[in-house]
Amino acid sequence: MESKESLQTALRTVYVDGAPMQVWDNPDASFGATPEDLRGFRREGSWVALFNAIALSARLEASR
Image (cartoon, rainbow, N blue to C red; front, side, top):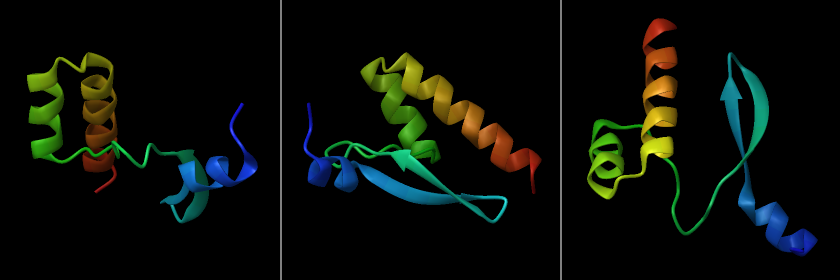
């Protein structure tokens, strides 16, 4: 089990519709949804990460 200190460093705050939301983030492999991130996920065969990035990107585009 991880220590409280390491759990705190794995959390980061993002804002969704102006409301803060804490999410887990891997500091060694931070998640992104830029076009370059999508290409990297495809190249690496990281299909779950690719799906998540596409879903987040589509949601962001729809909200604009």
